[in-house]
Image (tube, rainbow, N blue to C red; front, side, top):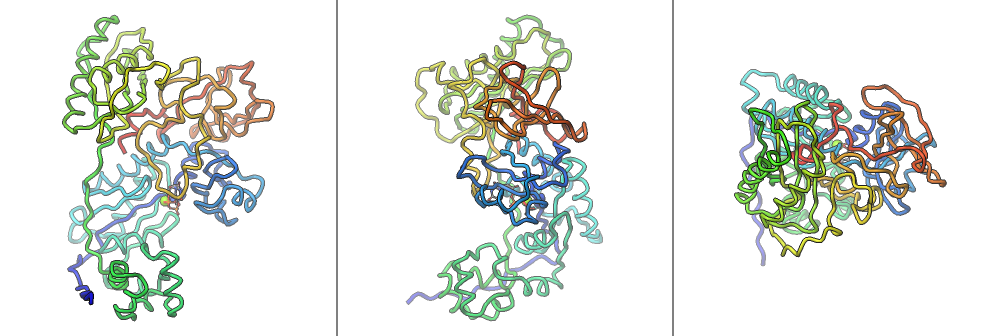
Length: 490
Ligand code: TTP
Ligand code: MG
């Protein structure tokens, strides 16, 4: 017979110094921040194909029942006709995410991001003995809003378990501190379904036993919980019901990019000099890549001109490689794509889309490459934006790596009707920057011309056949185009 030991109470913190921060309706809030006409309106972010799902719904859309992971068709039916549907723009979200995380990092180094819009932080050291924890959390919330323009919710507790439940309780936009003395009152009233780790199956079984709140759960003997949820699950429920969670906030993170850059004492003039210096920067970047023993698939080159304009261009190889020659050649190609004609102040190279294992590097086939910058022929380039969005399902979004569906910071890509999806960033010479609202059956594109700085903009039909309409990189929270290297640092 298999004996399961009754778990022992761990030693828990004396104060509610574990913070859990989570942005409110994250993807949709970024869309509303950048596109003033969307503020206050129902917004659905997700795929636009017939079988795609909702990544998230703005709070206005949630009032009509729209939810993450719901079929988009259903969400559209539930919401009024004024609802706007856009495809996700991960590069923009990653830039906002970095700002939100920065608000936490200003207070402590002990920040553990758990998803693109969510992190734990250990405020133990930051909160001196007599510091008011709620004030500290309110300060972080304000700072996150200043840096990112977005609303976040923060929960504090003496464990990750309680902090997360508290931030959920604080949504949207609130701060909730659950002091150890109040923990039981808070926990016991919660429905068991609110607990992470209680899936629908366990919830249904618990329901049959008359267990619907955490208070009911705490009354169950260990044996019952083992029967309901198995050995690991049952012991876990036993602990959760008592708030027994001593998991530390950890900061170990996977490396997302490796690179180097150099600002020159005097500006570089001429192709030969620039190319020679690029080699030296590539050497440093390769040394860093090697230290982490990984292969890279995307090579980004950053060039700052004497005029302080910064260009980035990227080249994506058919597969990851650690072959130095191939990576160096890709960096030089990226530099060529930048078409530098001015003196250069700074050069940088970074490697992205890193993977542990280099695959055998086959001879480079130019056709198979995916230059991340504007060349006239879009095929066989990246997957057209907005067409593989079924992948935006309930799975956690992957903020890493330059977004293959978008032009990145790699400069304008001429619009071909098939590449355009609602929500993507475009520009015309006559009207400036806007976003695609709709693509008409005749191939014309409805564009709304606005940014966070402009206030609500006007909408106009643009004919890509006769007008200059280009896809452009999304903007970050400060209104600057998102560079793939930045987006990657989250
Ligand atoms: P969440 O933090 O779970 O959701 P949210 O920020 O949209 O809303 P809330 O105010 O309730 O926190 O997820 C963060 C982002 O992750 C979300 O904006 C979109 C994405 N996501 C998906 O793509 N699919 C999903 O099923 C979920 C849950 C989220
Ligand atoms: Mg969120």
